[in-house]
Image (tube, rainbow, N blue to C red; front, side, top):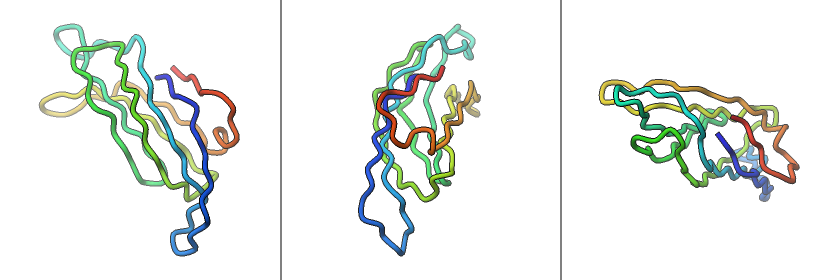
Length: 118
């Protein structure tokens, strides 16, 4: 999975929510994903989880090199937390986990370029 440079913006601190900042993540693409379906393809999507909150990309049908180009925003509650990217193959009965990456929030704060983790 290729993840575009996260953009960390720090809004005014809301004491009731204890929000440290806003993390904006763009999921760009996946490359050479495993064949999970009988026809030799997969129906991949990505779940992104931070501090118990999650977003999900759209499902790209029958594709091992999907391009999502979707952007999501998360409130950061813990600068020592992690960003978990889970790649799934959508199925009728239950979705299959294809892989995952864990990136620390501290690793992305102050970045000047994209993170490329495959």
